[in-house]
Image (cartoon, rainbow, N blue to C red; front, side, top):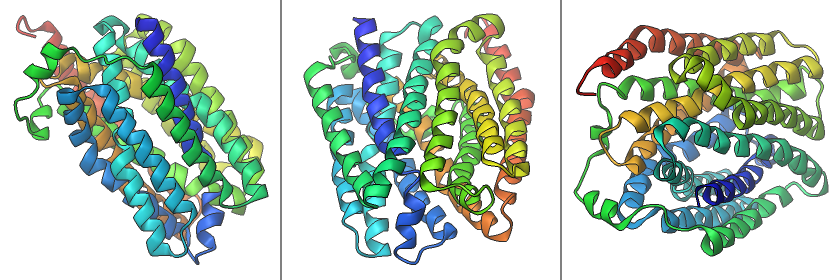
Length: 390
């Protein structure tokens, strides 16, 4: 049953990520039809993530009460509707409305999927399970930008309609095949009201902070890089799709095949600073790139480093949280979303000033996250492990 659930979640998140990453090569061109700039792109992405920041813990908490399956289905249906509205938009306010709606409803999907992993894996296998979900995202990121670049050549709005269709296909797959992972007795136990603030405990608060800083850097990169690729690297919509595909391959290799062996060799606590250091080096390399091949290589290194961080961080949080897994992962996703609120704004704005600034700034923030983890979070984790009450 566990292998069946993991395989199904892999398929579901693979399709979700294809639908999400289809947008990467075409969205900058699409919003320019409405007179938008890279800064507008940053604010548009931020509206999506702000909605996720507010609603992810609520969906996670709801999944602790009524089960994972219905909440995941709500998220998939909502994303299909919102992407259809995005494709039919006729003005910048319409774009912001559709993007915000997508953030509100789609934020039910990822934290619920991670909660299913927490429900169905042991603590020793959890990081590997989270890595499998990351691999699904990585593989989706391989095919999505490529498909988006090809579809964008046919029609600039076509990728958004295809995203909506993929969400509906995934919804049917979940409805037909995914069993409920949350046991009835656990639902009853989690029915008592719990605030999201209760998820911030001494052992987890700094892990949430690292999650925010990591995603802040990633989101700034994702916003600025398409413009960087077009302006400095001389890329086209299709070649940007290829670059993101190479990035996805690197991330999928790390998260799909290497997480387990790396965890056994160095442990989850060392995976996080290692991933942060690799990511920081890669960001500096991107800032110095002047050719598409160099940019693709640097992005691949960044994906490899980033792929070590999230599975280990989520696993550590779910192992040490004192609240339900749905709420704990929902709060993690909300911190992730907060990074996606502020990161695109910073990345898009800094790019207007100078094309290398988003990547150099992201490298500095990533190093800050590494310092924070090593100096504050790691000592607390070690104390917790050594305590007889832990």
